[in-house]
Length: 389
Image (tube, rainbow, N blue to C red; front, top):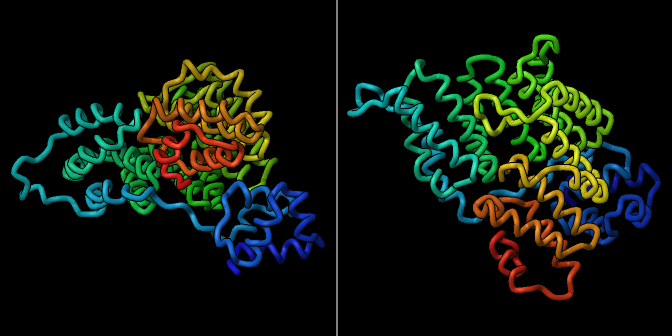
């Protein structure tokens, strides 16, 4: 029996519940509970663990004891091999470089690459990023801010494609190169996301609390950039808390984020950093995400009606993530055609992003389980997102 199964059985017995009673209280099927406790099923989805933890009145972290995290899609490790090497290898000594890079040249290359990151152009990035990382390393202390920004983006990209070890290297190096607390907070924001994806909820929560306290601005003199950065850290805090079954903490953080958004009055993108775009719409998106995590599809769909998704760029950290929540809500309420339409919308705008999303496979499984037959388009989607039928 795995750690999760042992803990689940022990806590269930402490609560005086049978497997059937726990199934009824949690909404998790008795067959899954039985398989987990018997060790026939070594892993469980985070959503399943959260539902069980809520029914047992424990935190998800207490229950999970480190469930297996889904790794990268088959074939992607080879794609990012050169990037991993560029992150790990020491810089080439300047005297051995026939054509040493210049700060202006590396900055221009970085600026030109930002649209590739924003539009999830993974194939192009896998080609150009290794050379950019080596050039940024060669700039020395003079290129510190440029190197920090490139490492932040690289870390975010590695998280997005589930290259978690490489992401950790990139983000630790970005933090070492941070020029000020705001720069450090931008890196910590991505580190929180990495920890969330790895299921390290307590660590993500603690990191978010630390940085939210570190950069909390004075309302009377807060700049838009400070409000955006602080607001995003509060959203990460809320995301970690809601997943760890700490509803009050999640709600308080979301209220503070809402206050920061009200002070901004609009969506703001500090220094054209698409990862830090924050404002009233972003808070609505993340409120819907929290509702999805707590299994309230009706709330997700109601909130979605008030979010101007058509005006948002197809970015993976906001719009596309929200559309996955909407697709999941439709699937949970039996509206399978609408759920599939949302997946198709995401795939059309971000075809290189969606295959890396475990969430997309979860939604597609719901659609498959709920339908008697699959259309050719649905079978094609399953293949595209690496879901075995």
